[in-house]
Length: 233
Image (cartoon, rainbow, N blue to C red; front, side):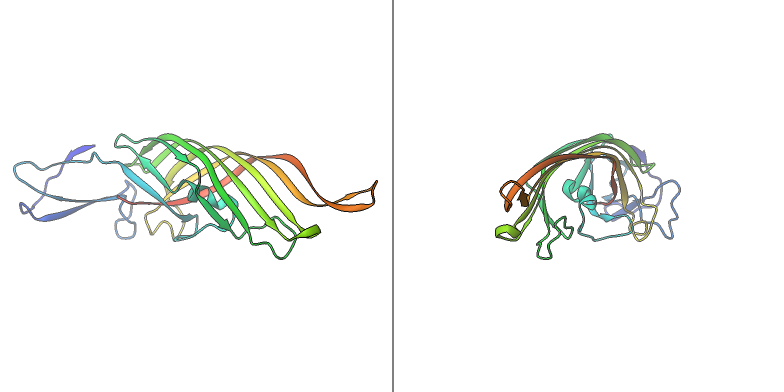
């Protein structure tokens, strides 16, 4: 993006340009982008050629928030979204990033919680900074692990999860995210659980309990959430 700025400036002085969304209330809303620059006459053209970085900060109605439940963690697993100078989004994420959640699937009272670990992710799309809107596709896979107990009281959920969705990027429309000038990342789509459960089972023939495992597959057609990102540059 390039534009010419007209106004009274002193050569060499530090200046800051705040850019607002077309429908923004400049008394209440935060700028979409702030740029610091110096003026060197006779040129007054400012080139906006750097990429934009969005950084996960929370979910709708929550800021500075670390997810506690699996559906809240999609934005956290991505961490950042990089948008090119032309608005293109094309990013891949390698695995290994982990987060302990408050959520629990086990019935026992001694569960330490769930550990999710990113396997891989990719995101493609486009974003129009002037309109604060964008859309694209998202693919994320991760592992879900929870175990507790010992002996015949041992239980474990080992789940491989995939999530494929269309997403939209738009200006935050609820507080406190709106006042922070955040961007909402809305992602809804099908998610598949490949579940392996290990725990106490009963052998009717032997009339005894033992630790065994079973597997199942579950699919949710409309899974996901609204994740809040802040503009970091």
